[in-house]
Image (cartoon, rainbow, N blue to C red; front, side, top):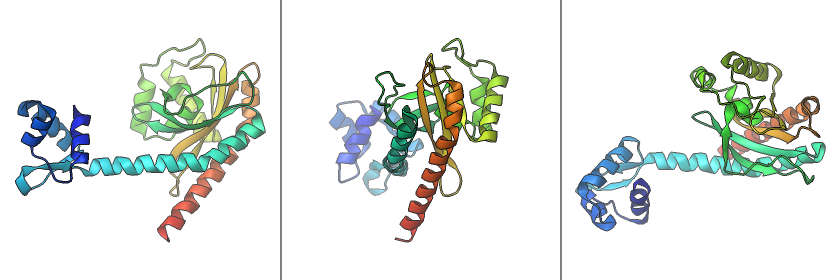
Length: 250
């Protein structure tokens, strides 16, 4: 129902009153009032003085900006994913952090090998158990790290880390060495290595990775490719920073 209200307001050139929204959706005013109150409190809609009508709020504009930045990031990053696939022969992924405790995949380039690590763009995964997730979780605010480590930590495979202290240590190692590892902890026999991507202020905004089947892409081999992943992340971060500066001076 909330989406119905938002889409109706988006299609209207003028603010709509509670009664008009209820009539067009063929619902009671009481039901629409509850929806509008929730949307207004979260800034998805706002009330205007004329006729007491409602229009779309600034929160949707903010989300649109975030979505636009994610789309631009994916476009810029694609060449770096291709570079990592060319170097390693394995699949490469781009992901960003989603509270609470998840990552969403923004882009991917698959390995040319018939057997490969598969992810789906737009799908989510638990940050604590995948390489991109750890590369991102390690740089979240302490409260978010504490929440993620406190769990509950699910055991997806026999190798999944379910001890909060061990998970914290993995995140510490990620910060110390500049890359993260996943050794079949979410999807059995899939190994991954990832590094964080930063914006022009140095904030971690995404992660880039290489992953592949363990029989071909062992943990030792993943570590060998860690410098290449970190270099790609650093180059991408630098390009994003340059693009930001160019936009400000355009």
